[in-house]
Figure 1: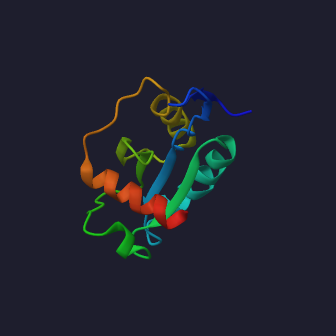
Figure 2: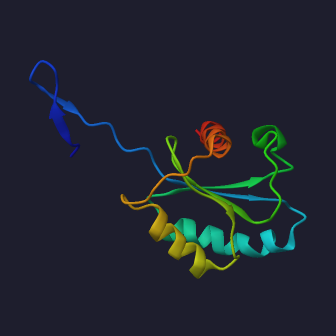
Figure 3: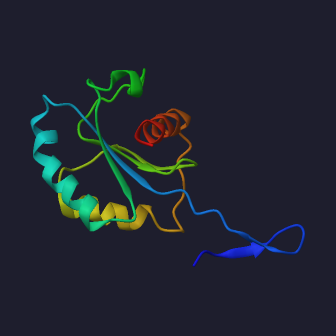
Length: 129
């Protein structure tokens, strides 16, 4: 059952669903650490079905990544179409990633002021639609 809110004419209008959270791993095929974390990343996707997960090889999808320079692998980008909650390198451990997700996707988190990261996330979301 979808939520309802009053419309201008007094009737009930559906409340738009919240933008889904995305967890994007920015990696490169040549990176041993990235290849090693891929199974844990895929397992997290199964453990967190309400989130969208995307694996982006920065060399294979160079046009998507654009001019943004990813210096350390793996780099995670977590947010939704309206805000970024995290953008940076992470320890390649499933337990660390899971704790991050629990803390960053809650209602009380604060967004980052990073227009380039948000633009990248929006391009990734559009490419996966």
